[in-house]
Length: 311
Image 1 (cartoon, rainbow, N blue to C red):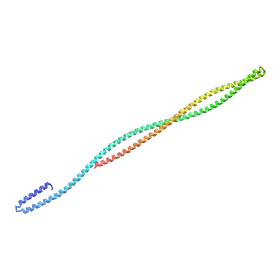
Image 2 (image 1 turned 120 degrees about the horizontal axis):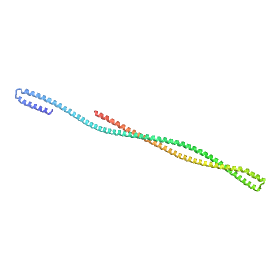
Image 3 (image 1 turned 180 degrees about the horizontal axis):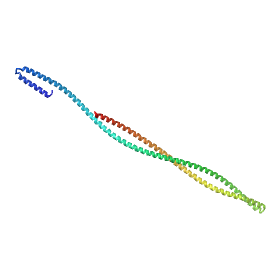
C-alpha cells in the first residue's frame, strides 16, 4: 500500500479504538465492537489485496522499465550505427564523386589520346603511303636507269668492237702505205739509173699507175682517222654518260635504302602507338571495373540506410 492509504488505515484503526472506548460505556458496546472489527478486517483484507496488486504492478512496472531501458539502449546503439553508416555513406558519396570526376578526366584524357593517336596514325599512314609511292617511283626510275645502263654498256661494247676493227684496218692500211712508199722509193732509184730509155719510161709509167692507189689509200686513211676521232669522241661521251648513270644509280640506291629505313621506322612507330593505345584501353577497363565496384558498394550502403531509416 501507498503512504496515503497506510495513513488512512491507521486513522481508521485509531478512530475505531476511540469509538470502541466510548461505546463500551453504552448498552450496545458488544455489537458495535463486533461490527467495527468486521469492518476493520474487511478494510485490512482490501488493503492486503491492494498491496498485492500494487506489488504486482511494481513488478510489471520494473519489467516495463527494464524493457524500456533495453529499447532505449537498442535505439541509442541503432542511432549510433545509423550515424556511422551515414558518415560512411557520405564518405562513399565523396569517393564516388571523386571517382566520377576522375572517370570524366580519364575519359577526357583518353579521348584526347585517341584523337592524338588517330592523327598520328593518319600522319604515319600518309607518310607511309608517300614513302611507298616514292619507293615505287624510285624502283621504277632505278629499273629505267639499269635498262639505260645496260643499253649504254651494250653500245660501249659495240663501240669497242668497232674501234678494234677500225684499229685493225688502220694498222693494215699503214702497213700497205709503208709498202707502197718503199716501192715508190725503189722505183725512183731504178729510174735514175736506167736513164731515159724505154725501160725507164715503163717503170715511170708503172709508178704513175701505182700513185693513184697510194693517194686513194691515203684518203681512206685520213677518212679512217676522222672516223676514229669521231668514234673516240662518241666513246668518251658514252663513257661519261655511263659514269653519270652509275652515279645516279648509286644515288638512287642510297635513297632507296634511306626510304626502306624510314619505312621500318614508321612501322616501329606505328606498332609503338598501337601498344600505347592498347595500354590506355586496359587502364580504362580497370578504372571502369573499379568504378562499377564502388557504385555497387554505394548502392548497397544506400539500401541498408533506407532499410534502417524505415525501422
